[in-house]
Image 1 (cartoon, helix red, strand yellow):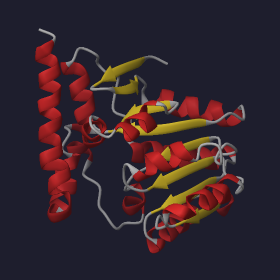
Image 2 (tube, helix red, strand yellow):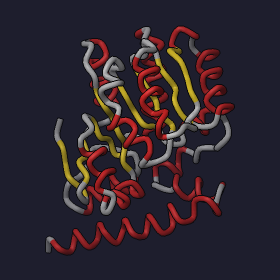
Image 3 (tube, helix red, strand yellow):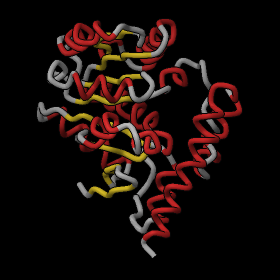
Image 4 (cartoon, helix red, strand yellow):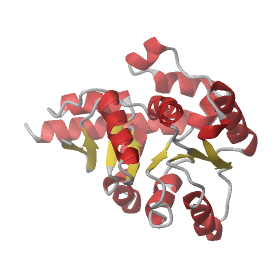
Length: 246
């Protein structure tokens, strides 16, 4: 897999189809793959959060979740093939689990949200794809017991819907306890979308890179700092690196 580096962040240059094939091969061969997606906000945080940077860059598979990252790759002369959005990859992998009889553990979000996600996929596909679920609220001292429970659940796939950097650090620090799970992935706020708590932007907004604005418009008080300040800082960092090469 070809890897490019953008602002101290390693990213695999893969399409959605290529990513799904790698995951399928990993599970069918009985191996383990630790996956992470990066967007503009996470890359900005990684500039100063060295623990987060380590957790991300030492993952086995890193996709560009945000359209802004694809834009940056082109500006910096390292063009990515396409955006591989975490929520789209998750949806595709649930379908793959149904086709291949893989089992999934859903970990994160509020109790009613994760239960709704499990109910939705049970009705849409089959209860056979469910290895277990747990909400995302816990104390630091509970982490290892939670990871052990997931590791012994029989899951082939683990989706973790917890905010950064908590999810990245949880997955990195508990990799040994999760070794029986073939594919491990952080999915951010995807459970909220699947459960219907949050609406996703129309396709046209996703394609032109305005999904962040749609999300901001739904919860401006909670999201303004992440998107307005974070995106501005990201653009500044990209342009600074681009001009430093000239």
